[in-house]
Image 1 (tube, helix red, strand yellow):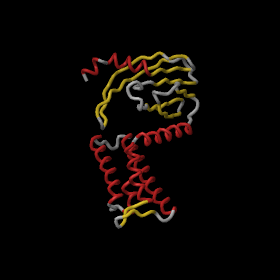
Image 2 (cartoon, one colour):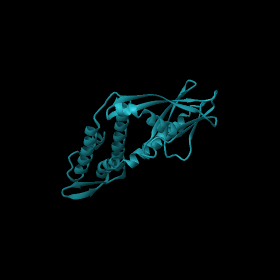
Image 3 (cartoon, one colour):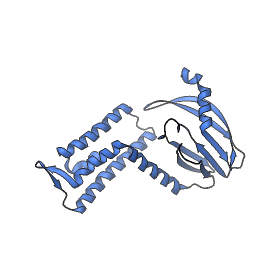
Image 4 (cartoon, rainbow, N blue to C red):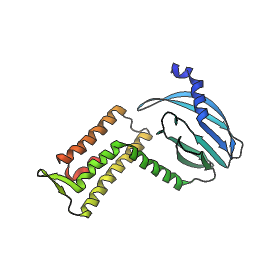
Length: 222
């Protein structure tokens, strides 16, 4: 904390330079507030309050978010915007070519939903552990080991419903896990979680060579 406290001005300058807010095209004056530390399951995090003084009333809010873009292009910020009794959320990409704009009179639920779906697909695509786990679980839907040889699936209908059960189980469990973690109801050490993820991938792969799970793969995926 002492090291962080002594670097407070540098932290504030870094954040202010990379988070630019404008109101109807006019820049809002930034100022840094108190610097704090909070504990999450994976460690301690710095929290810096930033204030932006804008000319009122504001119709369109512009947000140019570049935080951590120079250090980690995979970083994403989460925005929770409350205005006029309406609340909306958005994903902030520090590598975006242009600032994001928000009309404060509109909630925009459908665009927000599409944004999160897109980010979810991207999250799975860049996570090789997700893809390997799903491939290992889905392979037995079309091809499995029996009597020392590979046997192909007989009908498309059987394959379709088998895949549907596995993907649904995986998706539901992923959603529940993220919800519990985000709300802070369950907090686990990241090292243990990552170890269990690796073990689950290995189990799914081993099951392709020595089938022991059978028709319960959807339960393993969950």
